[in-house]
Every structure is written in C-alpha cells, then in structure tokens.
Image (cartoon, rainbow, N blue to C red; front, side, top):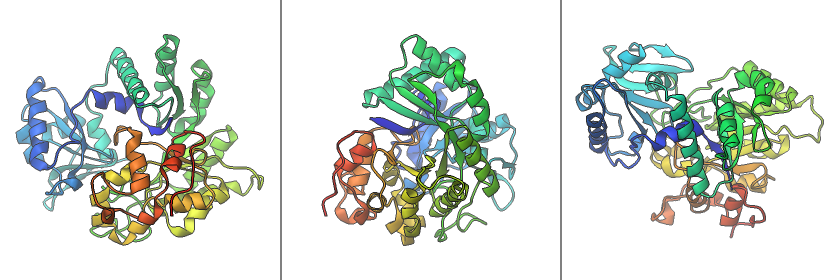
Length: 425
C-alpha cells in the first residue's frame, strides 16, 4: 500500500511525545499537561500533540492561566491535531520571543483578548514559532526518530510513503538509513516549493530507485477547525475578519511555482482544504496548462480537498490534476463540520462524484492520512470513504452519504491494484 501524505519527521517525534488524542474534555487535557510537566526537568520544554478542542464539551482551548498553573516550572505548548493552531503558557511565549498580537508569517498571529493580553492561543505561523522554540533533536536522535516512523508505517502494511513539506536534511538522512539497510519502503519527497530548484540540483547526492525527489509543496489555505480554510460560502461563527477563511498564497507566486516545477519535470502538491482554495488552485493550474499539449497531464496534486464545489469536480480529470485526499479527516472533523459548515455538508469529500467524473482510484484519486495529524491506520480512511461516519454510529449520522464509495475502490486508492469495483447503489 501507499501512504500518499505523511510527515516523517513529525511522526517520529509524535511517537516519542505525549498525545492528547484520547482526551474527552478540557479537564483531561489539563491532567495530561500536569502529568507531562511533573515528569520533565524544571525549565525543560513540555510539548503535547493532537489536541482536539472542538470535540470537547467546552469547545475551547485551555487558557494561558490554566496552562501556567498546570505547568508552572516549564515552557508548555499544546499542538492541535491539524497543526494549524496551538496553545501555550507564558514561559513558552517568552522562550519563543513572541509578543501578544504579533503577526508571524505565514499568516500567523498570537491571539489576544479585548484588553490586548495574550490568551495563549496561537494560529498558523505563530503556532509553529512557539512549537519550534523547543530544542531540536540531536543528529543521532533524529535518525532514530526517522527509523521509528518508517517502521511504524511498515507495520501498518505500507510499502511506499510520500513525505509532504520535507526538511532539507531529510533526503540525506534517509539515504544514510538506506545505506545501512534501514529504509524499509520507497519514499517520495516534497520539499517546500521555494526550495525545489535547489533540491533538484542537489538530489544526485541522495536519490536512489527507492528514494526520490517527486515535487514541491505549497499551502493555499488553512484548516476547517481553525476556520482558516478558504471556503466559497461563509462559516457559521467565523474567525474575526475572516468570514470565509483565507487564501494564504499569492496567485502569481502559485503560477510561478507551477511553471518552475514543470520545467524541472516535477509537480507541485498544494494544500487546499476549503472549496474556495480548491478552486483557486485549479484556476492556477488551468492557466499554466494553456501552453501544454492538449493530451498531456499536469501531474500536479491538490492535497486534502475536504470541500469541493460541484462545479469544480469535473475539472480534476479534465485538467489532469491528482486529487490527494485523506478521508480519515472526516472522522476527526465531524464536530467542526457540523458547527461551522452545516450548510455545506453535501460537499464534504465528494468521492463518488470524483470517480464518476473520470478519476481512477490509485492513479489520480489517491489516499493518505496526513500522519501524525491523524493516525496512519488505513482502516480509518476506508471506513470514512465507505461508511461516511464514525464507527458505531447510525447511518443517520453519515456526512454526505451519497458520496460513499465501495471498499474495493477505497483500497485501490491506497494503491492496492485490481481492487476497484463500483459502489453498491
């Protein structure tokens, strides 16, 4: 099987870090923080991942005061499961050198209350700035974390993984693992698109038949849970000054990056979760493709595509764009979808329409997980694609039931050949 959207370095770290995934409410979250802080040396960074505040009864992050009390002797930061928001205490903000209200690229902000005081909430680039203030792993630790990530994916049955937004050290580190017999699968790398030409020039030092540079990565919008995904129809309860989320990428820059990738014989993988961002990226790819032969395919990918407007579904096959989706996100986003986009639930992951429009599971409709944003178990995406709801819930809870596909089609989207079959009507 192929895991078409993963983050190997972050997965390795997450396997060695406390998780908040099992928390049912705010109190349990704070209990986890207290436990992690008690186990850490005074002054050491405490980081926990996979927070899902939208799924808690309180539907909010812990405040900066609550985190100060839970981790009084340590910088502490909690990362959301989607990695687009975080919460931190005062010591972590100080360690990162960020100020209340500060704007931090890309599209990040240190959120403040009405009095201008930091709430502890961090969005987009601000979340990464504080999360990244913790000490980096040593080279030996980094290699061990990569090995753990690869073995974890291998244990789930994957023989190929695509790493999206690859670090500049990842290719050489994976090549070192391959030389010692510790690369158990094929790996395709997608570094940030701004580095694509440099990575292309340097790839000869680490590429092999099992390890290659596949393309570049860009972000067009944010996420649904943070309400920063760009949507065509406004959110219920939008973020201040962002009724429809936000496009996080200049159109001219996107067209330039697409052109460079094609010149290098590569392609781009563009993060676009909202239907507004999906249309924005399709428009750019179509514009760049005008100079191409009519029978040629772009090979460019749009990642996530959690909402797609009906008018844009047939454009994927027509332009030759790969739809790279993670159906498992439907399971984790149920509360956010119902709360913020109840009027657009019929446009969530329109897999049936995409296949009927001409996309082929495993070729130009491909599945991944976005691990460690969510777990990599392919059973989650198969369940979401086929049942359109969480396990154990009634059919009435399904989101966009008409968009379900067959289990064979879902498995084929993971790269299991010869398994695609029509869904039962």
